Image (cartoon, rainbow, N blue to C red):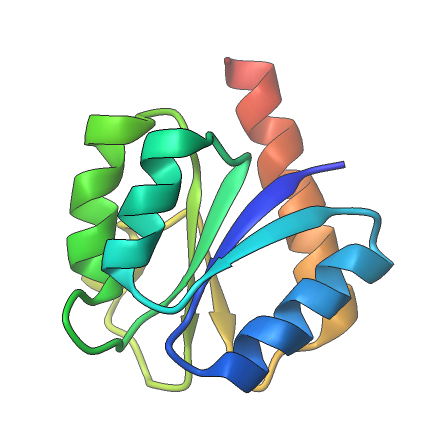
Length: 120
């Protein structure tokens, strides 16, 4: 079971992803912004950060840049409804295109966490 931070400015997306994760036996904490996610990182260490690409205030790239200061070994996956270039995609451990498929999300979360635990 993984503990996942879900960071998205859309409350419905956060709720749906949290429910998907719960169906797969995972737990989650939600944040509505990159700033809120950094506050969570200061208190808890997740197994994975799942963050939206475009958020007001602090986007996923800025959040990703802050993550090593708090938890350098925590994998980070990207949620997006946009087309991405390869350079951007290489900065994340996985990319999920919206709309999400529950089975794809759960399988990928399990694989990322398993790989991170093997390399830790």
